[in-house]
Image 1 (tube, helix red, strand yellow):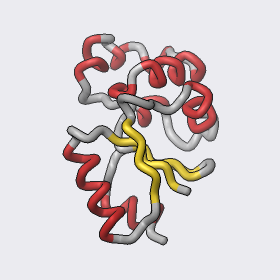
Image 2 (cartoon, helix red, strand yellow; image 1 turned 120 degrees about the vertical axis):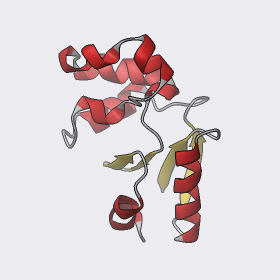
Image 3 (cartoon, rainbow, N blue to C red; image 1 turned 90 degrees about the vertical axis):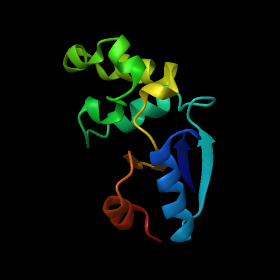
Length: 118
């Protein structure tokens, strides 16, 4: 089962949800702010080494700017990054879609087409 972590007040998440429903993709929706993925779940994805750490962060978010993460991510370890991301769902680039060891952060219709079309 695909897990769709999203934030209800996020327009990008709304577009992704609409795409998933229109393309009849089965998914379980979880509020990324109320119930963010655990540090262990995020570390597992990060360790797959498919993307740089920055890929996982909501770089346009207020908290990202407040913490000045732009200057810190390159020196951050995987464990530290996973714990930080798990501490605040708004730090995670959303929506986050996961199925086993397959995942995407953010929403681009062409990527969803190739990655999540059933």
